[in-house]
Image 1 (cartoon, rainbow, N blue to C red):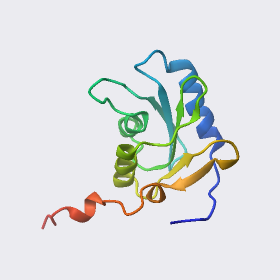
Image 2: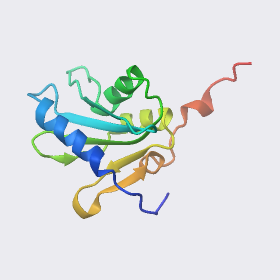
Image 3: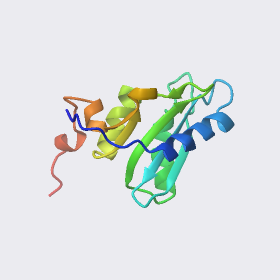
Image 4: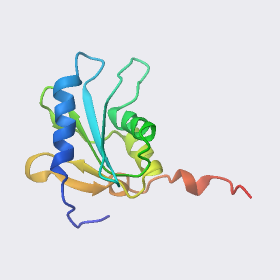
Length: 137
């Protein structure tokens, strides 16, 4: 586990917070996420809650980023509606983020405890999907 502190991308937190304030309405959209691509672009999205387990905001950001040609995300944050602040990714999102972007940093915590953590640190002893695929010779 990495113990060094990583800088927190305040602009990214503000982008997610703004989307949460302006786009999260009712029970269907309660979390906003923002991700920074390697080229500096910021991509935002909201969750799509559904009783069948609709996608979290972090997963919607992955699709939105791909639709915009941003395939290399370097930092991500999720923010709850109603001024709930930074929300850590759920286990399913942690696994998907690790599989898609193994070097991704995820902003977690609030106040003095806010930090950017490598996604691998958020999912210790993780299953690495790529390690279990058959070689395509």
